[in-house]
Image (cartoon, rainbow, N blue to C red; front, side, top):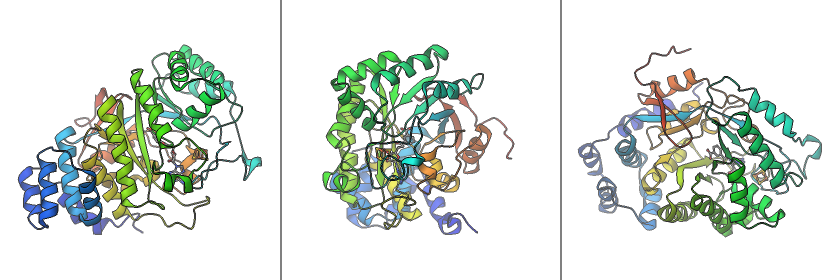
Length: 400
Ligand code: V47
Ligand code: SF4
């Protein structure tokens, strides 16, 4: 059985690997003047408006969107496709919030299934990677009512003491907002405290969809869109970098997606602190939104392509492969994506519980390199801040 409709996508993949201006212009010849004008803007490197982004979502064919997104991707990065070697720590699945799409939080529904790691257990996870060439730890979990900012500051200090060169990317704006408010600290005070303790950058989680009419229906009780943006702006002002996500493919419409991306694009104009945009496909298993159907693969590719075209000031676009599955993640590399996240050799639970393609997401470096090479891109290992650590494009790797 095919994991994704590969044959159907074959010709699209072919079209999307067209990258010269002339090739894309020839393809554009088939489209309406409205789409052609937007396409010309993209080819000239000019920013498209919210209205134009919406037109792309509503009227752009997958082949046109793919070709334009691939043009932008190759202009920025050529065939380079980044990944890093990281591992995750999930301190707890207990969460004071109750997002309807979440398959993970266990405070109210299933208290007996809740777990929390002690400081020592988390340090043991870090020590388990001693001698291994990982460069980043990604710390993210539920919002536990008892784990406060001082607990986490101590954890950060102890990780840095043990392994000073390990980049700590940790805590969504949702976790941070709760920690800061509980400690009665301003965002700036709280961020400075954690930064001084060893926090290097922020992951992109918790953004979901900023538009209040949707956010209030899917995650009403946690930090709102303004609060999320303010936390990232504060981190950027302190010299930290961060990522941004968007949870798509549930009850939002295209206008909500464009609004979300536009607010991120505006903040990026001001601070230039975002590294990567990561569209996250809504998965509907074991959560309160199981009745909402999941988006098709074609819709997913459209999402990546419009994101690459619209987010012109975001250097990188990431496909989180455990969520999409390996083959679909390969396909995204023809729709604007230039980053495949990491090797993640642990069992990240937040997605496997929501019904992601990968039940125990784990890929060795060799496997990730092979996946990227199979679709004729150049695998490049990076650190969290996209410094190149190793170019695998000319190295032989075995394919098992
Ligand atoms: O904010 C939760 C999402 C996010 C579901 O910055 C779901 O490098 C789909 O942000 N279906 C947390 N998505 C994870 C995250 C992340 C992951 C990988 C890399 C980075 C990075 C950040 O997970 C949450 C939420 O949007 N999520 N439940 C679900 N059912
Ligand atoms: Fe808590 Fe995050 Fe799940 Fe929302 S998505 S319930 S904040 S763990």
